Length: 89
Image (tube, rainbow, N blue to C red; front, side, top):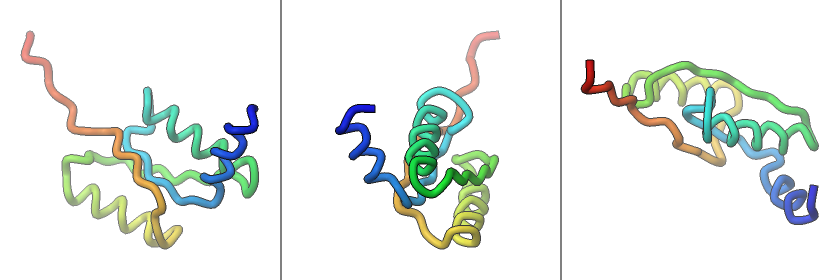
């Protein structure tokens, strides 16, 4: 790990992040980055909340879960959005 990468990861240490769309692609890579940064110092901890970010009740459930388990959020990475259905058959 380069010196600048180590410094960047240290900046994430102890931060509480919410990453939407963390099951695949960019969201998965971002989630992994945050977990790796946490593992370098205090140990990784992840909470998974399945839901639809286009549904306000699901967002309320996410907020309640985070507030109950960790109390606050430092970073939000809003990667997921509503899926579009194919117009083709």
